[in-house]
Image 1 (cartoon, rainbow, N blue to C red):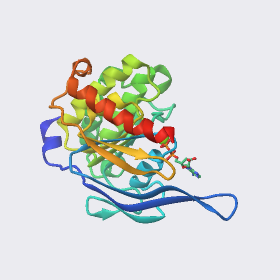
Image 2 (image 1 turned 90 degrees about the vertical axis):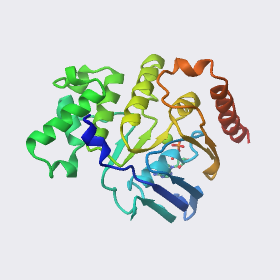
Image 3 (image 1 turned 45 degrees about the vertical axis):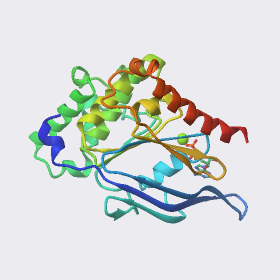
Amino acid sequence: MTASAVVTRQGATVDIVGVSKSFNQRSDSARVVLRDVNLTVRSGEFVSIVGASGCGKTTLIRMVAGLAPYSSGMIRVGDTIVKGVPKRLGFVFQDAALMPWRTVRANVAMGLNETGALLSKADARTKVEEAMGLVGLSAFADYYPGQLSGGMKQRAGLARALVSEPDLMLMDEPFGALDAFTRLRLQEELAAIVARTTTTTMFVTHDVDEAVFLSDRIVVMSTSPGTVKDIIEVDLPRPRLRREGLLDNRRAAELRDQVLGLVIEDQAR
Ligand SMILES: Nc1ncnc2c1ncn2[C@@H]1O[C@H](COP(=O)(O)OP(=O)(O)O)[C@@H](O)[C@H]1O
Ligand SMILES: [Mg+2]
């Protein structure tokens, strides 16, 4: 990515204020999945969300993305209250969800969506090439998803999210389906990428070490109904380049134990 592509923009702030979410059940009753969630994510901040399975992490992030309505409260991205999908949003799912009949380049280009219409063809092409370069996929631009490894597919999904230079990146267990080694490398690459951009990131994971490595803050959620239980500040210096660097870091171990303790405490109930 060129310097000019990143210095002019600012990451969005995200305000989640008193948000609750219920799902209607077969009977007349509604099930409260999230209750009174409050969280402010600062511009450019990297926040991870961890919590037991089923606590509502995906539901929360989908609501921020405008993909699901919230039952009460308010979510604001930048200065816009979320009603539909906010502009300049990048979303990465656990499954890269690539179009199998399109090349990597064409899949990445899809991420330009409404911003693409404002660009000349040449500029759009440049952005797509830059995004592929950022995730190390330049040599695979003409490949089809079926020809890629799991890690490369996630890279393509990441490039598709990054290509529009989003103000906000939402990532829902993006590395959850990858083998341990690919996962470590992608964590390092993501850390390097976000360090070079101004984007704000909300990152759902069940991997506490991953959260410690990547985050400025870690939001621990409790279950039934899901709400913010605690927020842990990750006071490890940046840049954090290598996962191995955290293995013998005492503070990282303390933070991991603290977060893990909070999650397990909740699961035990
Ligand atoms: N569309 C839906 N309809 C009904 N219940 C749902 C729906 N989506 C999620 N849920 C329920 O909401 C809870 C939280 O789900 P989810 O947000 O996927 O949790 P997490 O991502 O933390 O594992 C779960 O109990 C799940 O069954
Ligand atoms: Mg989930």
